[in-house]
Image 1 (cartoon, one colour):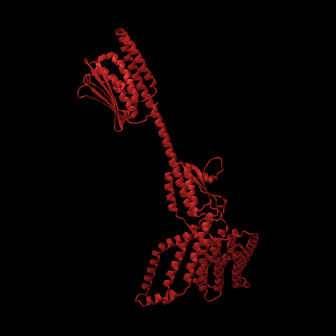
Image 2 (tube, one colour):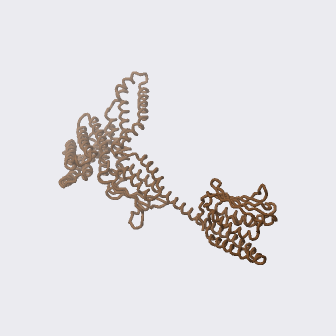
Image 3 (cartoon, helix red, strand yellow):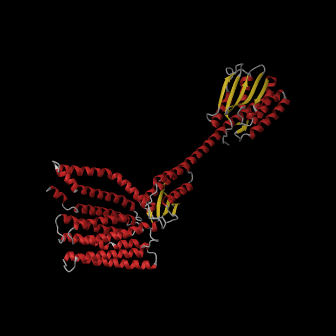
Length: 638
């Protein structure tokens, strides 16, 4: 009794699985076509195709369920289920002929397509009226067998004529032509099988053939819908549903296998062995599902859509964008990546200015699809939409699907991010420039103030010397006046120049010391040592004069005997070392004065921590002041 129960109705399980799979597939297809209905260029034929397929699969599923429940073929419920199924079948040529219509380019093809469209609507309406009249009113004068066969022949005839008149082999893509031929054959065979199965003994066998032929039709629909926006999504879910149906059919076949049951009945616990075997096979199928699903989906996508390597394209674009520093270069790189990756005819980035009337949805950051497959993708930068990527796939390329759009959204995001980075870099550079100008202005004001301290102080001391000489030695006073005029000509000439060469600074010091020799007489001996390698290096103007004056006033002036002054300039690696040395009273006997403080402040303002000044006693007596300044250091001040 157990074996008989398991094997009863060997075709019922297959029919249930086949039609259930068809219902799930058509529901997915219908949902996706309804989502795409608002997009321009999406034909309503896609929705009609989905509705017809859903009616076919749903009617077939109800018919199998009622038959399995024990309802006879002439009961109202079974007849209604069959009517639903054949209504979808009768209307099926209408959307298929509409999908083929764009490929009818010649005038006689367009006339034939118009005639077939009228004929398909007429045949579908007449067949549906007759079938529902027979079912709902019980009109015995109408034979269901005759209706089913007539509908099958009529649909097949319309589709065959549509193929040979609307689809030319040379003008129609192979991805459309070959699936269309298979669909015609599958529809005719499926309807014929159902018509025969209603009135013969092995109805389950014929119903199973019909249900699985519908699955073949859906497989071919993958190719027919290759221009459909959500085709890749439909394929991804469709492959999973079909694979699940096949796995369920395998499991059902194994559960009802006579060979397996023959082994099970020999065991002491047949039910336990049977359940264990079914669970074991189910687990094996479940474990293999994901592995096979990924590879089948990848194979179908690569073969049907020629899917490029989006990840590599995005990665390469990101690397290129990181090396670009101009907005036009960034736009050109994004345009080229989109055009070459997706084989587009148009790929162009334009600024989102107010002169063009852009769609409101685009300004709000949404993708906008125009007629003939043209797309507008917003590019967001600095928190707002600043540019638009215009896309046109071209007449020979299939429509862009969701994966293509995801790729385009990804690259416009990269574009926006790079534009953001460029804007930030530009703002940073501009801010740094402003800060540099402000810093230079502050430095300039500080240096002018420091130089202003030197000039009156020097002038005061020199005039005091001239006044003293006028009383004691008028000729020398006249000579000193002329030298003083020469010194101040140099001071006035360099008052607006922050830098001077070491050679010019030494010449100025020689003139200045000629004045001081008038005061010191033979008590002052001066020696200059300048390395020719640094003679043209730039240093702050009037830098050494305060140091020399400080040495004369505090070191050599109070000394009664002859004093020596050494002034030198030597290279010291990346710096120039300037020295002012004397053999006067030294650090313990004389204060530093204003000059040293002024020099230290000027060095800090111009060179920050790159220059230094040190004061130290000489071994043989006196003081040494050393100044280290960076070589070839351009300081932009006024």
